[in-house]
Length: 308
Ligand SMILES: CC(=O)N[C@@H]([C@@H](O)[C@H](O)[C@H](O)CO)[C@@H](O)CC(=O)C(=O)O
Image: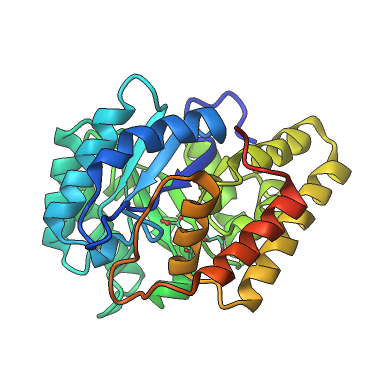
């Protein structure tokens, strides 16, 4: 992956947001969550308040409380805490960026506003807004076209962005356009920037294109397994890397057949890790537990049990 890198690399867990049965933040779980990621998943960095964290379904105050608690509990333990600050309102993103810097986050990331959709220049100006609010923090653009509907060529957005946003340090690319991904890696690499991939089921293809690492929801519970894939790829054992990716794909092809969504994903995490993540936040609704149990059985069948 990234040679001689002190950048964001390896597996980064896009964290779930623990809620009480009543749907309020359960901050007491963050400490045990940090220890679980480190000890059971061998995952050392987190991406907080992102898609998996239902960040856009939380209030600004809730997002600030989570960012602060992850930084507090992760201090001296986690390698990096990246805080997602993307909002529909640029001013809200700037408020979250300032707060992330004030609580010791290592980096910030932001999706584009997705109700009124920007042009390429609009994406740059929005990112500039977030970056200017926390100029000392590395800023990553978070590309997630499947959910934002902001379908652009990220490579075109990158052109000259270093002259407009000095703190820009790379991408979190959660798209399936590997041509655009390759073009982005080609542009970012000479700048020493990180390109992190966000479609876990096809990470191996992205590794072949030179991404530095990955941010994803599944690294919360199959991080230990996917680290084996990363290691196999780095050692040049492509056959093993392929076998491990195929096993992971088998699980999520099965999960998708059951209607896999973020709510079901959160329930899988609770069942697999033993950490009670609680219900999803509206507009998502919980699923019947039997579906989650079927996915956990498939996980165990393909990947072995959760490390004790
Ligand atoms: C649409 C979506 O939620 N994608 C996930 C993936 O990790 C996804 O859960 C995984 O590939 C399983 O489908 C991540 O890209 C999201 C992410 O990194 C985040 O939560 O910010």
